[in-house]
Amino acid sequence: MAADPPVIQRRQQGHSRSYIIDRLKRENRTDFVDAIERGELSAYAVGVQMGWFTRPPSVAAVTHQARKRQLRLQAIADDGLTLTQIQELRLGVCGAESVFSSREELEDAWQRARERLMAPLAPGRRPQAFYEFEFTGPRPPYDTERSVLWRMGLLTADEKATLEAEWKMEFERGAGPDFTLNDGSGEILGGDCARAAHYAWADIPRELVKRWEKAARRRRGRRSASSEEVAAAK
Image 1 (spheres, rainbow, N blue to C red):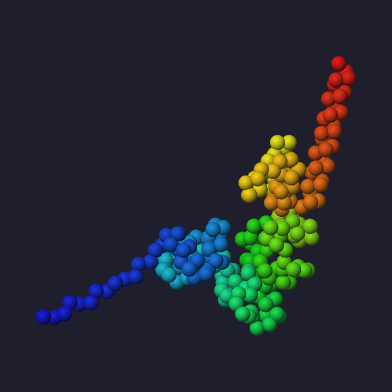
Image 2 (image 1 turned 90 degrees about the horizontal axis):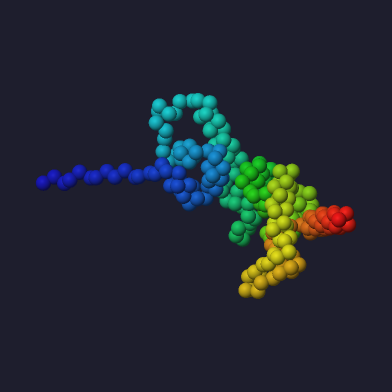
């Protein structure tokens, strides 16, 4: 009796956004993940670019939207750097030695990849290569990185405005007379101690705290003077 013909199994590939993002993360393609999460590219377009599946012929026609999508994809791929090189620019040397053959090669890679490495970062955050080539001194601790860059004038105008608005909100949150804070050990802090701990946690520059405290005292003084004038008039 003839043997049964072999069963040909087709590998199933998912087209869902979550599947594609998970697979990109497994392959350490955080550049494409960042672009998807920023809304610059669709997960499906990235999957096609990676060669995981192809667009139906009816969809593959060249359109204005398709050209824009291809330019965005190409912008991510055009710096010509490997994933390990990108990781070193982000995080510093991982392992015994650098994957770059010279400091000149490292600096050239930073200049080529700088824009896309900086774009997804939160205001006041920087990759390691920034501190290697655009900063004097050791990298500041994560907890004070934003205030250090603010103090040194190394933030963009948008970053500065965003952070100062965030810091002002945290300053006002701690400025109330009844403000208290759990310091993490179970002890409840109050008054100036609580405010100082809160401002340190929020990494508010001391210069801004002094400026805002001075402005608050002036406002209180004006209100007090107005109240006294009203009382005297009566």
